[in-house]
Length: 280
Image 1 (cartoon, rainbow, N blue to C red):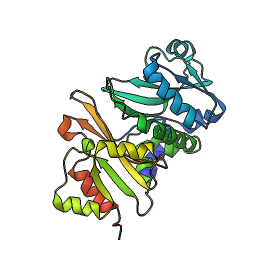
Image 2: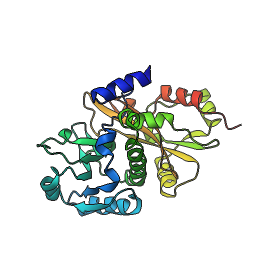
Image 3: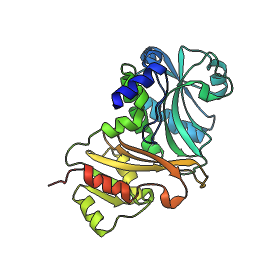
Image 4: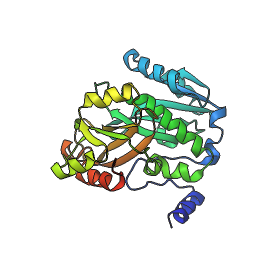
């Protein structure tokens, strides 16, 4: 039934959001030229933010030619349908998103009129911390894998990153590390023991960052992105990312009410106990 529904949506040229999770808009025929076109990486003009962004792109981007450009150059060139653009920008949700869009003949003032190839929140708008930098390289690799699949498979493009994460399977014996700052509800003693039997434990933010930075093998690390201020009808995202393979294994989006509901809750932990096989 799901495949029938997806096929119908593809025929109608609509976008699909699965289970209130991360949303992707793309069509195979519109992004099939991605690897042949130049990607313009849009810089903000702030040296402190641009330098690490440029460094990650230089280290990770490999599927298409790319150039760095300024905001004014983006405004000048955004109507060129032979170009793609990647940037980190805030939206009306309290979050800065890493996003790739395609040039549009009539982009207007609103970026939403441009075809969004792939997009995922990276940090809270106004966030002063640097934790996001440990995940930025992984985001770039996740995007590239997704784009290559979306170029040849409409169902992948429409169902998006969250569905791709749902289908991902970690190798047996993997370690799952959830930062304490990413936990909305602490599991009880019995749940903690059940999680430990499956290689999942709650650790400090510093430990998760270190594992990402050293690309720890067979290790999945949490990352929660939420607005700085609780705002009605805004969202928060909870991710599990492979520290070494840079795959997205879990992506959940939900309404952000306050700090107490942002991140991994007991329902999520219960689901992990059901889905992850015990180590022994």
